[in-house]
Length: 93
Image (cartoon, rainbow, N blue to C red; front, side, top):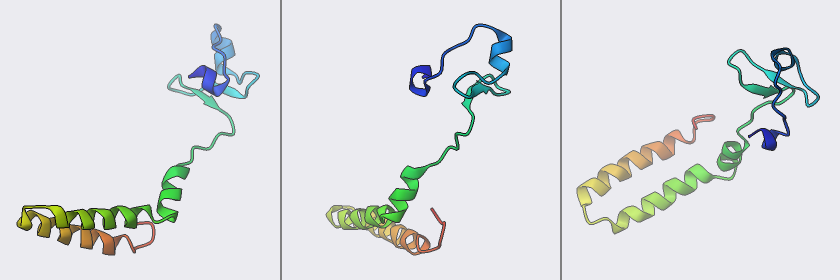
């Protein structure tokens, strides 16, 4: 993990409490954090922006036609249609 973050482990407690040459330090739980790093879930934003939710719903609805259990397929179709309508609400996912 440290190699991925380009961070070296330090041996002294005084060194751990202060930021090192890479701008990282230990937080209250003892985890190394990089100053200036803001976690971002870009994958999920791109998935939503490119219509991933609607695509999954449409593929699942299409696959319901292949189900042999009609009653279960109808229940799933109803649930997916409701999910599809809720997905139109901004920031629902």
